[in-house]
Amino acid sequence: MFLQAVDTVDQINPDAFRRSYYLAGKPIVIKRLSKDWPAFTKWNWEYFKDIVGDKKVGIYNNIKTDAFTPVNTPNGHTTFGEYVDMISKGPAGWRIFLFNIFDHAPQLTKDFEWPDHLAKGFVKRFPMLFVGGATSITHMHFDIDLSHVFHTQFMGRKKVLLFPYEEQKKLYRKPFEVQSQADFSHYHENSGTPDYEKFPALKYARGFEVTLDHGDTLYMPSGYWHHMEYLDSGFAMSLRSMQTSAAGKIRGLWNLVGMRNIDTFMKKNFPEKWYSYKLKKLNNAALHELKLQETGS
Image (cartoon, rainbow, N blue to C red; front, top):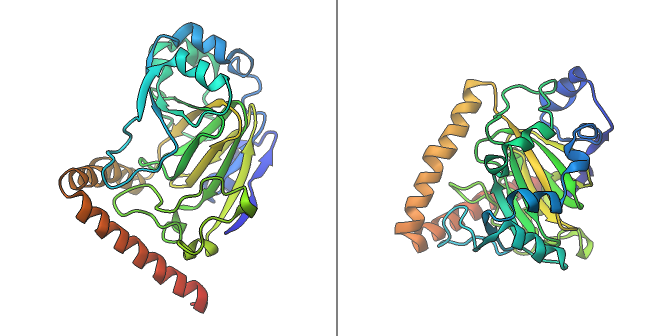
């Protein structure tokens, strides 16, 4: 893989952001965007336990999904308070995915500001909290609705690997899914090399990497692939801005309503055949891309 550092600034004016990152489809880390939010100092484990500790949450392990796994199916359930106690004791490869804490505690929406000066079309009904124990992993994927994402880290450090949407063939994208067949777990260890023998096209994938710390906001353009690893137990909040173009909205709607429902139906009724079909298709696409890269075409 060819990786470069994500551009990092303390602050950025809206014109520069729109010109160099939003319209250019390039990620950036803005370190001081959240520094004046009450959430920056107010949000911590004990505070969340006090207000939502009794709420039941689905938790996910680090095992990648297979042919028989429905989309976004948790591997277990617990209360938020019990989960925090578990991950506070040491490394725990469990995470909470898409927990809408704001439904249970709407007062939290007063603790941050929407970055309307940087982007429009924020889905203000659905800010989302992402929580993980140290060593937990969010495997390589892109967001199904193709929204632009402002992802702010509040506790702990997180390692993030990013690729433009166009790199999907080199990343072995599963047909009718938003996930990669390749496993990037602990890519930053072992000299940063995933399994190139099994996934040789990965050698030519071009992307970015960054480590997020408390208060850092990562802007991920629409369709960006991302893989995240929690170096420490922590949590982050994502604010999503929908695409403004009709074509972008239609593609996102197709992913949500058409593509996902087709995949769910086929997984349920023809899991082995469907999985074999997707493996053949993704490997053929990657092989074609590999030949193009090696011949310089």
